[in-house]
Length: 510
Image (cartoon, rainbow, N blue to C red):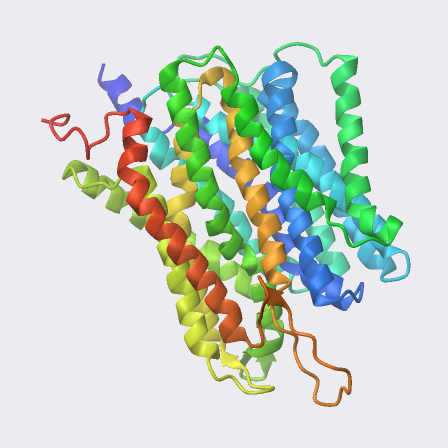
């Protein structure tokens, strides 16, 4: 009996296996992301606005394809096989990025589209399924799930910390190759140890195939690859400025809730909980839309208008993207202790309130950087510590929102729809990342005093953005309003969840 209690106080070994697998996959993804926009502007010689839109389309589609991967996993493949297929495709995609960087502007763009397509589809198979498996390691209602996702999130950030330092310290082509190596390590680890560690506490094998994949769905996979490659190439093929990826992503964001909620097998309680997930997913768009400037406008800002000199050494701009994961690694155990401390005293805020706090912290981060750039003159640069402060504050906001969101979906989604609901949660990230690319394109141009060309400033809803202070104010207003509304709605959302939360049931622990 004592052994069973001790086991349930700790975590199953499968959690740490998934931690290691995800850590290397995230090394691959974030290593590539750290240098992607700089690669497009410096090697492929794209304009800032075009590169930002491509960045948003790529990261948006990365979070859209988990819908396809979640569906095929639930109906046919199972988690294990889906993760292996995804890993193989992502490794191929990173290798194609290496080839693209080796070729350069003359011919490298088409290879880049192929590489992005492989990574996007591969991520759709990998990402929702490995996150879902974390929840499957625990019995229903087990309170360890919150801390398990926090630990799992530390694995994500450990990989994200090292990758910009490694991939950003070398030529672009070798950076992409190192991202490929990271994905291969993740894949080999998963294939070798999956049978040993992917078992429940009752000894049941997890993530096994449901039934053989039929021809129809094989054609769906092939068709999806062709569609994504076509969408990425649309502007280049037709010389047209219509952004069909925006219509595709935002359309899916509207359609999926309607499709899932039309399922007649849902009970009233299940339906209410799914509605809560969708409402919170809407607010998540504003969080990630501001947060994901890290790989877009903030990287351009770090490269051009941040003083990166340490003695005689100039730190690569991509290194700033290691600040966020390092802060998360350091602060995640502290946040876990804080939530536990508040829980025992019946003061722990509900999941919606934690997420509202996350949005407020993102706004605070942009207030800091707005102070730094106010009155910034032509050619002036700000101290790197302002940018570091922004990333640390944003990391605190991330810890209030992201692991809480993953845990919430795992707890609220009906088991038969678990992977699809996780994929739908990532759909909000898809819309947010596409939105982030659109917002990044609004960064005012860096003015060349020697240029005689007229300056064209971007505008938002008809208002021109002429300096960095105005640009960052856009994010302050957006996230502050979203945080306020979510905080007001939080009590109603908690009631909809219909769980025995400490705020509503103070007698529960007596």
